[in-house]
Length: 132
Length: 132
Length: 132
Length: 132
Image 1: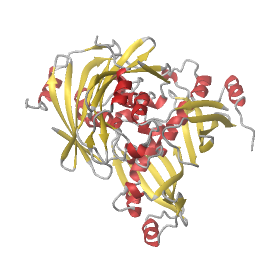
Image 2: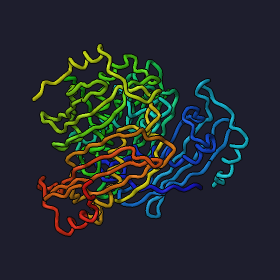
Image 3: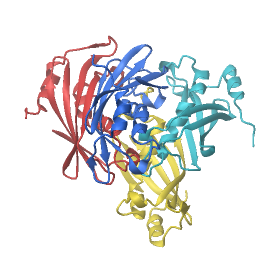
Image 4: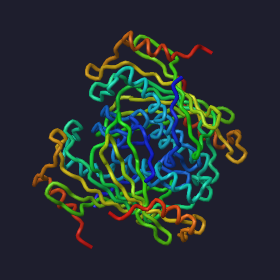
């Protein structure tokens, strides 16, 4: 799996003194950057090739300020035009959250989905997580 | 269903000129405020009674700046200590997103879940959405 | 002054159980929406006419979850191409913060500032706060 | 000066395809973490020793997605109970923003400011930026 490490930012906590649940979708998006680059190596915002269809996040443990978090990213499913990204938040040796995001290869001008080109499919394949 | 209306804030957009997917968990949390009040009428941050276990959000249409969004909130399931909140984002007469959040009645001091008291269960019941 | 009222959102708090200082720039931006409309009545994101040059925010009191905030917005200075917006956060009858934001009438294509057209200058003038 | 490097996160952009101005207060807060540790080496959220009095941020250039930002942090002024932190955002070899934040050594229980202890003052002194 891909790995990205962040310091928890103070403003990402909430009044319960842990990380707000609302923050994780943003962390996961940030950690998907290498996957974005498969589709647009120059990160071209004028021809962005992906749209998000859904995400589900399970919160397993509270996440705290003062310790780094590691985000691990793999691919769980590759379809014709969509694929599922599995991501985990680890902190202090424990898995604290796990999420699955469905992304679609998308043409914003035509406002419709597009098949995933084979050379990108191969890159996603290399990140495929064996079924558990 | 409960209803809450927000103006989209400019900073909630991203470089794709629509609302960032990372914003919706926060909108849904904000719109659950009446549900929080069932559990803590004084919104007591020192004895907060709920923890979030998971959310899943499906994005059906792009959401844009310049038009209000309405968040509709109902209850989909009531268990012993947990319950599921169903929420929708509506913009310009169209359902743009739908999410389900699982919350748990929780004691942060003991770090364990608690049964939902009957008088709160009744309030949740009043928001129960008939199965479709 | 213009007035806009928000509920404080739970995720806008931080571990100190008050509203994070990082939130106010966003509240002020949201409350400047009527000023944006002077420059672009249709809120045209493809020809956005303003860029932000600076802001300064003074925090006078802690702001808490559970009570609404009112944002008051006026104009403090009108220059040739730039102007200063004065904004205040009020909560429970007390002024909790005050900020000044300098905005510039800007052409993103040419990447340069533009004089403020007279008909817009008049609208800003109507919000001008008399010197105290 | 202290240095901290971040990737720009996609959700930190706005519809103008650059980083939202509302994001910088959070970046600066995150980059002040070493300064927080002078006051509370264990990052003790139950006895947080600082409150923010004001910040001013000047935006010199647009900041873009796809390139890292470096935040440089130094001390500009040390008073009896307050001090000013000077911070800069650098991207692709250019200074893109500069801010000054006033922090106060603060006792949240008594709700009043406290003198900066000499051993902390010395640490701040070591980051003092010579007057330009």
